[in-house]
Image: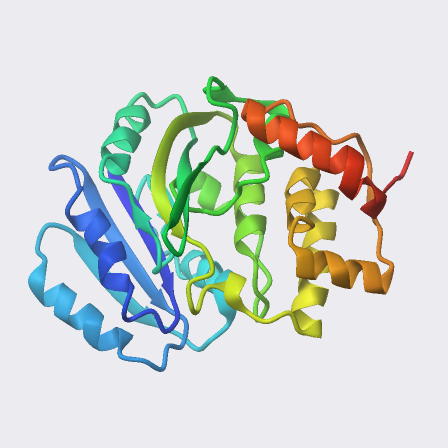
Amino acid sequence: MKLSVIIPTYNCASFIEKAINSIVKNRPNDLEIEVLIIDDGSIDNTNKVIKKIQDQINNLTLQYFYKSNGNWGSVINYVRNNKLAKGEWVTVLDSDDIFSKKTISIFQKYAQKQRYDAIIFDYYKCWKKFLWKIPTYARFRKEIKGELKKQTPFCIPLAKFFKNEVFYQLPKLRENVGFQDAIYTMHALQIANNVFHVSKAGGYYFFKRVGNSMSIPWHSSRFDIEVQICKDLIENNAQEIALVHLLRLKFRNLVDDKKIKFTVKRDFCFSGFSWYSRLILSLMYNFWLKRYFNSSE
């Protein structure tokens, strides 16, 4: 079995070695891994850092590709258009995040069962000195089916593994705009037929690190992009993800200023979440966020 790990990077020379090491140091001996580093137009010394790493490792394939800047969605499009991912399984690891120590071994165990076309982990969210576990689905939900697959608000690509055929069925992502990772995950979960949930933290997501999309200032173009992403999520029956976007104060204030409301086609469904996420989001929606949504019925 072979795993393709796509690492999108942009000016992350100071972080990317840790991301790569989280693969190299924890790779099972009987699993073939190819790492595809897609440099989205970096102007720092990322290329030199990668060259040094390539000279040092010999237990996996590490390929480096440089392209003009087009943001996160363009990286996924680049891999798909050039058919670079050759593994039976594909995952995306952002260059400022890392896998947990046992993630790849646990993934391999379930992938070998050949019953699933998506294997999804929880993850740790890291901010400054704080760390907390984010459950993708409710703890005791293992095999995720139907519309429940998309009804998770925690949809970053970290520690989400998809079969090759799922990856290559993805629609083209938008380029030259940010925040396409949620759209990527939503579509992949929509395409996958058999999703398995591992209720362990598969990686560390470094929220609001310099260079992370979450650290971009709230200018008008970012706001317009976020509004469109929320509409896309709702259109694709993943409105729970759109709801979480509205938890951010600055975005919510701008939505208030523009008097924007989002039209949804169904009631919100929180049944797939952990009990505390279900409770918190239900309360927030009913007493606080409901006013941002209209029903089309």
